Image (cartoon, rainbow, N blue to C red; front, side, top):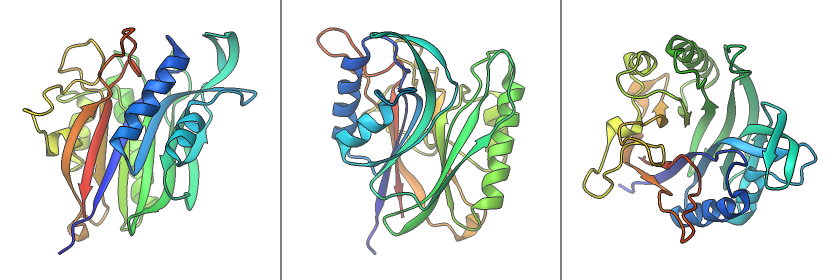
Length: 262
């Protein structure tokens, strides 16, 4: 039996912070080396005039299609001064999407609007619903993160039919927290829980310079018809953690890389 593999990456790109131009190059180089089929990006910096967009830059560098969803419009400080910009969401894929949209999530006025981006696409003969999101960062609002996840999972169960749902992003929550416990009660397990090659990839945290247990970026998969799905995680690890010779990292988050066998 011929086993096919789909490689998926999620990465919070850290807006335009730090040495943005150098970081863009680091991201492009690191992602190109990973050769992913699908990339989910959060905190995607894009100027209102379209002159700069992290998602389209990476897509052009990797020769992929980019579906960008603007969000969280405000003035941000960058290397070029203060600019009106978005911190949006983007999905990169080798095949163009079949349908796409934006799902509003419960939010808190202290945090601003929060969204989930969804796409339908086909990868390696598999039809997927892809959901890319960035949940609230408010430390005391674990209940809000759970509400946001409930909205996403309910939406996916309604719209995906019996197909596979690939969900990922910066969830701002980790193992043992109520929001993650709720996901696991729905039989939706993070790729880290399904597989981890600890000897080759010992870092389980996803924040640069933070405790190894601070794992808040996740890839997850589920199907409303779980018994019919033969797709499973076969590998998961972190990447893009190395700084260049100036000490510059691609982002303040590591990339999470998952491989699905089907």
